[in-house]
Length: 631
Image (cartoon, rainbow, N blue to C red):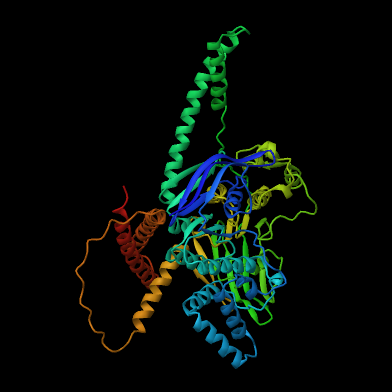
């Protein structure tokens, strides 16, 4: 079934053209990701499709039987009503029955008679299957205080309530729903993101979404739309295919521009030689000249920032935490935490929302005070803090003024410096935009400006608290490339699994009740470790009675597995890990053959050698599995 058709639609914002004459179609079952730079019109396009905005030119057709559900970045609620009333705002008999049932169930003093009547009503409507789905959604999104008024919720809580509201709403529409989602993973912890990923894959929905989470995009969507240079480009397949096809498109565009430039030079020479009075034939060539001129002067925006910062000197002492305790009332954040940071460390922080991750970052910077214990910071440490609070502006200012208030110039590693204006240009704020007031920027552009300002201070210890929220994919690529070469210390809190996998060496895992475990690996390795433990636990806790053997079905030939973007990343990581383990194995073998070591140290080295051998065998087996799909 055909859901949406757009023919040559256009939209501008003031003098800025967002998109022009774009055409696209959405059919039932499509799962599409929309990517573009911040400020290119992604959110505007989503609002147009949901009926909250209109096109200036062109035709937009939506099938009369299709219901459009929009999850947006800034959700609107009835502020004085409770979470429960906002979630079950949908006017439907099942919605009314479930709202009544949930209200009675969550009350402190339950009325048995009212509860019985509510149960009977839900039973009469046959709504138990849907009630189970509601329970799953509320539980997985950690929404429990249903009687709380929405106006008292934090930003993250509001986003989760809005997400629950959207997912429950589409459940009342049994078919023909177009679900539109604008950054659905923002303010969700990693477990919630993984649950949402599985939920959307299981549900039979037609989906159009904007997301910066590449693993989420890879696993949920099978088509990518790119909004670039006022046009829309369609790529069938996964994220890796998108990157490959986009690179080919850019190369082709640059080649065409070079051809146009050569033709432009010849035509320009002809134009200058011609007399003012022109024949009809000459007039036709003159018109063609201006068309060639437009192609020749076309600009390709380079989204790759190449920046070698002259980092403040990092001394031998970085930071040391000794027996640190921190609590808020009955809630324990840290329980005797000990750790000594080393130069160049790259640590990721993960844990459920409310586990104390942001408090830990505040303690490290001296913005919060510990209950007991010591926190010693090195004399040369300059913190750069990218926080969730965003920009702090006393009054509305122009971009260039705000950056110049920090510093006039940015020192470079090779000598010399960049002016504030050039630095802004490198971070995709062209000169014509630099005198724009900050209040006029989109949410993503404000985040990019915040990031720019943190780096402009030249820190040697970067603290990034959810840095990927509201950043577009081109800016994320810029940030990741920069941080890959960053020589200072790096501490990252993020739900973006790809971002964590690429940048961190080990994890602080906030388990709750003040317990923090140090895991030696990235996030994907941590998840593999957890699944391995769960599998072992299932085996150990299995029934003691012998299981009845099930006859094996004839094995079907497996279909050739698709080599996904996530598989490609795992394959690259395995190659690096195997090389590191091989080097360590060689070093240990050389030490053991020296015959000058004491027995205790030889014993330790022997144990480590056995661990490395086992680990290499497992990783080599996985590497061989993946290598079958590498071209």
